[in-house]
Image (cartoon, rainbow, N blue to C red):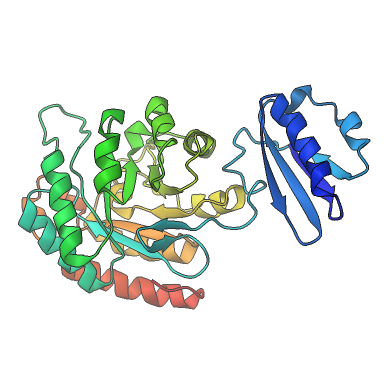
Length: 338
């Protein structure tokens, strides 16, 4: 529910309304505008008598939000959110973030070498998997803590913030201490206990869309994190599962503008997992930038043919550099930059 109050409403009168809702166990946020004050109420507002509330001389109008997600909704937060990841801004209308790195951390020198290539190419952040949720229990599951600490060293050598995927709540302390942007993978998008736990920390979260999730389900997962108090959420489209088998997944680029209409959260695109084919990554990256995405996350490996996981969708460093250069040109056409 959004209560629009007159601009000349005294703060003590607004406080009375706020206290009333808080007594019902609801959360209420005040937004001060140029010509009005908004009171955004989150909770079960069906018990509120709108007619009685409108009797207040300082209340201009009342409207109910028609979406199940409140904090995520653009109605609650009209301006674009900008998430700060160790100095790298994601969101807004200027810069587009570019995240690059291997699917899996394979060792200290491997990740440090790739980190240097990412930085030299103009990348903003380094990605790398240390804990790997895999379909088969017999495939490589990641180096665990060793992989995280290798990325920490790569950050020391290059200055790039690091991104890595968390798979269980018991690793939260480790990730809070060492990782700049905590990724929730597609398989864990609806791991609600994990989302609740991540809502209690003050660390940016990269939330990937589930394999077969609707946009509303995805945004509701973001709501779980924000309802816990963590507003630093970045959405990531990585392709959804359809009947098509030529590509690994089907990249839904229309979601960029849909998400921007419905929510204030930034959205980035992962063309590597979306296509599963390195030859398609460049074109989908450029299309994502043109569509208005706030960032890209691209898998990069020095020797894809020898990669321990997802080599078929990884770009070599020289190809990654070419993509960044072309993406920058596309970004300038629409008034942005990388």
